[in-house]
Amino acid sequence: MKIRAILSIAAVLVVVVTMALGVYGAYAIRSLNVLINTIYDKALMTSTFSQSARANWSKLDRAMAGGAPRARLDALEREFLSDLDVVAASLEP
Image (tube, rainbow, N blue to C red; front, side, top):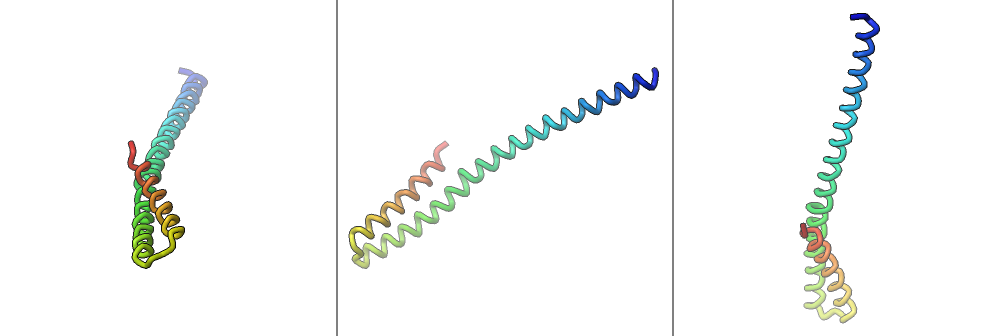
């Protein structure tokens, strides 16, 4: 086999291997993107907003016990319910 043919085959192999690594890299990035979105949208958002809902519930409870004005109670209730809405949306499949 001539040196020219060997070099041509080697160049083609390098191109094929490079293309295969590019395809694998794209697949790996897509897989990580799905994983990161799942972690952020599901676990982190649910945890953060459930803690916020718990804190808002405590504020609402104290305000009710302390005889706060109705406008303040309505605002606290809206905050609490909006946090619960985000938690419920994060838990849906």
